[in-house]
Image (cartoon, rainbow over all chains, first blue to last red; front, side):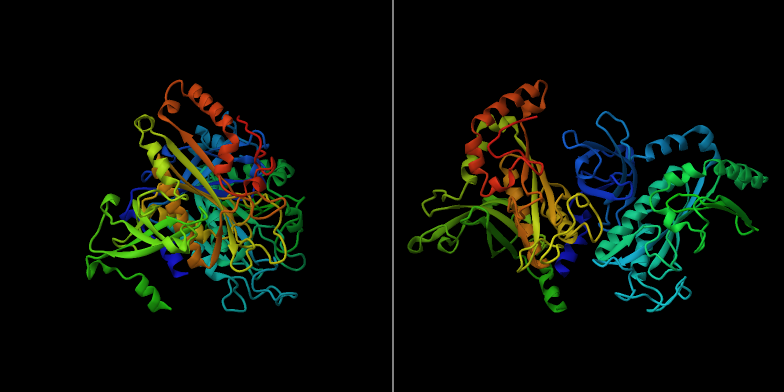
Length: 333
Length: 307
């Protein structure tokens, strides 16, 4: 297979100016990622200079069969860690041919809000802690777990090392470097409480770019697990019982919150979040009722609570794919 | 096995001027590809300067045993992505010793048409979307499918990622770069609706060169699957049932079609195509009646329609 690897790793910059652009979009479930590649005549670094493209929406549950064209608008460019050279990954959002965002396109409205001058002035920061579980292919049982059985109870696995405690570190470490190479603001990784579960963090990133970076980091992760022969799951509660779930704690702050007197601004914002708890939970994705039970380091899904810790200055929402069940405030001392 | 790879990857340009030319042709079925290599004394970039060659046509179903010599005429050169250096791939077509194209040689007549001054002036563009299926060696069941069973139904696989959705991406990605390296105008790739099925696109290319580039791309693909231990299939309907087939959607335009008022030209051309539907279908190869059913994103084989 080394000849195949040689070809995959060919550095084309000696032979052609052409580059390969992998256009990435979110599919009909709102969580599945899709991509396809095209050749461009030369290097491009500004997403606005990339051509729009299209795909068959009836194949992704995003359009009916008789009128299935969906248009891809390039929004963000990252270096391609798989093809390297001058090749790129392009994060896109999806529109009808008439220019309307299709229903699964949440980015469009978010970008509008983030570009409002009042919002721009507040420089909103996001730090997103993406948890995920690695599963054995075909069995869908976590990586490293005995088939037909369970590992020892939680305790030794959080940030653990060793063949009996850390399952799949090669995936995690290659993902870390691949994201840094790509230009994603990946700030760290750690092994999680449930064995076979890991976390990476993206941020602090400003506004819409936090979303773009998180989605491309998810894309790179699933491409890596594809190579490794392992399934990646973002399910909030992959294993029922005395095992932690997988969420996406989201850290957030604005300029006013970071300045003197910020704690009062934070409290006001928390007050507002509390008023919309049910609507927010509904927007945060499927399955969180299985995770947010009040046990395993979560709050109950129907409860909005907040707590102040003196660790760092940011509002921390306990999230799963951006769902709020509790707010924890931590302030840098 | 590392010594073998070292030798395969030897860069000869330090030690000799000689290059290796792999001559490629289409065999007796009209779809099987054949090739053999020869040494040349130095680099060549013009196909007209390459020597003609010959092969044993009785071994490829292209000539009788008692008069089996078939002559290879070099027509297009590409850089060899396997041997690299100054080594080349040469797309050829096939003639009798008397200079007559043998029956499987469709290129000769096509090249004549494409070189007609009226056709040259119209700069005909082709964009070819070649679909194909990867099959497990020996069992001929698609790559990634469970033996004796089926994967989940179509839906997640089109442009999908992940070990449970994309089967064989290393082949597809190696092929993409190999074709770019070779100088083929490969414009993109994507995973297809049926799992284990993929597509690459060649073009827009002008006239006869689109055919040469497509065949060179098919050759490179089968050489890569050979290394990967996987079988390549261009069969139009490899798996019966609720699974998409594999076609080669062909995008086409002429200068007049691309200019102002082009839509009327296009409509006229479509009408002409409609008059010859049966003849064209017959020329498009074996097995399309299994693919063109009216289901799975196709039209029925007997129906000519446009939208």
